[in-house]
Length: 594
Figure 1 (cartoon, one colour):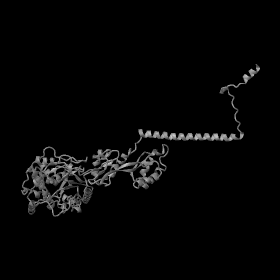
Figure 2 (figure 1 turned 60 degrees about the vertical axis):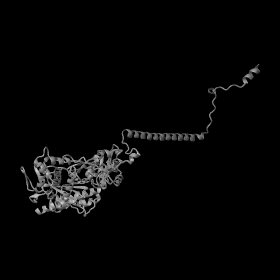
Figure 3 (figure 1 turned 60 degrees about the horizontal axis):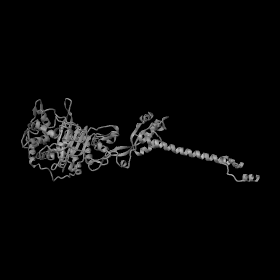
Figure 4 (figure 1 turned 120 degrees about the vertical axis):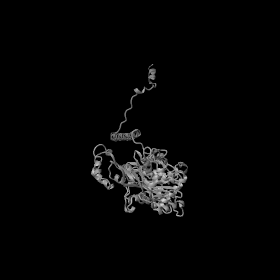
């Protein structure tokens, strides 16, 4: 019995669960290895800490970058170019002349900006003193006022120090090491021809757009994202424009005049080939310094243009049937109208025919022709030529004519007949002369290049036969009359002088004269009209001490036409001319009577 019990207890048993297992004894580590294990743990802990710092740094940078992107996206400045397409499109469209020569274009530029907050809110924004920085800037920009610049820097106010600087100047500013002197890159409007055609182009003010001129007229097109890719071609020819401004400036300076204006107009299309007003301005600096000399005498100045109106009055009288026989003698003695007496500057006999009246510029005969026509018919002729409204041109600066109010009296009609009592712009006169010589069709002037299919039909204001006769008589004025100094050999110039005293308070100012010459060439097949107006010329040695148009305005045309003729496809030819054989004897007979 005992043996069985012992055997039962000796049999194998199932092991106890783990919680009840007896733990194994810990290994015994030799005393010499304890320091090395402690060092290893420390190094491992330090590596983990560094890794955490590195991860944290990257996370902080990423967070700052995300915040910066959010700030720029919602409240900051957008990039100047958002796409490749924007990078290839100019920020403002280009303007060219009729042949593609650039007149106005956009290009990247640099400015000098003072930013006091660049160094933080505490302390001076400059590393060096304002006086020292101003002295260093003076070395880079010699034209600045050093004292004013130092005061400007010391004020601590942000703003432009110079609106435009050159790349090499920007590098020198960077070399100063002043963080507060920033060089922002901007877009500038550049006029490669300088002051040439300034009154035609106008100028651009940053953040405001075009001011005056075609810059203002074409603002929507030049700034439109879809339209600014194509250059806008104007009607002017930069070569003709340069010649006009050059000769106009020479004539103005030679006579000490206060100003001058000139126009070259295509008689068949109405395109302005050149337009100038002096004094002029440089559009490259006009936007920054403000407008100077922006008044356009060619389209905005209104003048009584004197005897240049006489051919217009004669043409209207021919159309009205008042002048039929050009050989008919007209009384050339002084005309007494009420308290006013109309007389000629120089007497050429007691009677003159119409060709003689134009060649010798007779006020009395022209006044009698206008009187025979009557106020209503002459007034109607002037209205048909647009003399009663602002000139037809795209420019915003267009002068309003000084038009006689109400019904014209007899004296008003007679004085308007020889160019007094009605003040218009030189462009009015150019358009009227174009109609008078091109067959009788008036067309509005334009500064936009016109394709042949886009030329307006215009409206008839003179009979074709009248236009033909006027071409003959205008040519005779240049050959035998007051326009001799405008007769450029081979170019068959015809035109009329005009000299008128300026109207002022209390009457006309006898010391202030406006001299003008309106011409066309070549008169056998007219293609271009040239109008030159000189404002208040003085009698100088260059003008033989005379102020009248024969000595001041006509010579300008005589020098200009040979310069621009070949450029416009008109070559000199002394074997050709308008046929005046049936009228020449009338003027010759007048010469004998004189």
